[in-house]
Length: 117
Image 1 (cartoon, helix red, strand yellow):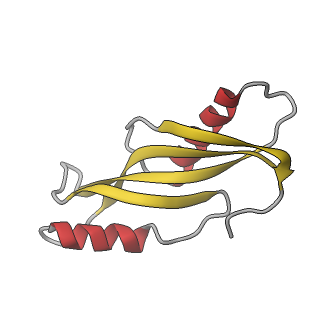
Image 2 (cartoon, one colour; image 1 turned 90 degrees about the vertical axis):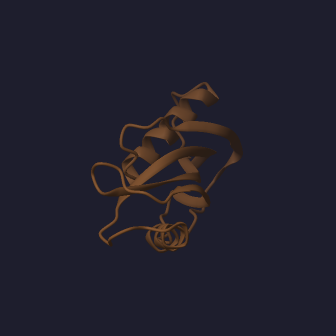
Image 3 (cartoon, rainbow, N blue to C red; image 1 turned 60 degrees about the vertical axis):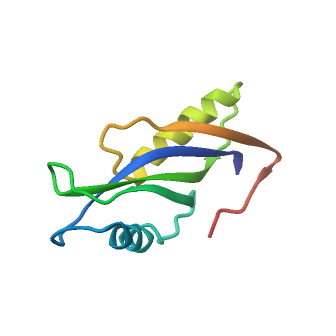
């Protein structure tokens, strides 16, 4: 059972093996890499693509994702669910130490039973 859906924003880094990325190739690359569906995480938006490599050969983009957070009877505040959602985002995507921000959240009452798949 899921108690909350949180929308988070973060910057994701993915290894880019081709020579020199262009903006169009970077957009296509991220769309292909992030199309995988997860049960608890759904990518809503990919934007702010960086079409140059960093020192580690990675390209970056900012993503907004919806995260389902499981119900915990000991959690009293919405901010605790938001914190858990940000941790889930860091577990699913390589954020490279960048900040993960909870934009907004929606509490479910009654609890949600379905996942995103």
